[in-house]
Length: 210
Image (cartoon, rainbow, N blue to C red):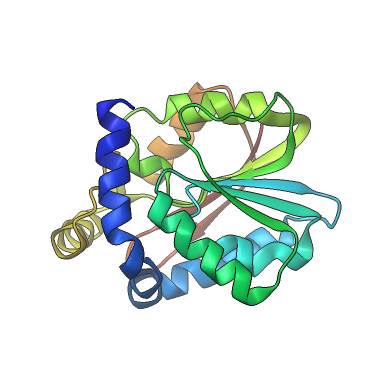
């Protein structure tokens, strides 16, 4: 395992027990809007992959809207907690796996939808998971990437810094809304839908095709 994987795994393993309460306390409004929009973009025939699932907030919210969900995270502890929830829920169409978004093990053109919610801004090389997403996405599939745009204004930068000091997680890519869209198109993605979610920090809700 390389140094990047070790660092990411250690941090998110330590954070796993606080993840759900963190989302609820800090980003409840944002995630409510994200989930409403994701639900509107789904179909009962879709096979979905989520990368960076955490403890499964999104899969547990959308499972009834799709055929199946494979949800992955680099953190074994996040996946352990998600699987505990899954056992209690008795939901049958979700599977959680430990995977690294830089090197996914799925065959080409495996999924109708790939979701990466508030992940890309945390990665030093977001182009690598984007390349993987394009590989495993079906030709007519969609990529949904709600992402914090910390660089949109001074207020967002200050709030993100405060959250980082309290929680320990680091925003690597402090994109503005415009810069985030530019990064996506520079990596060969076609933006099909976009929405600004206004909260403590602006979130770009972007739906793309390859």
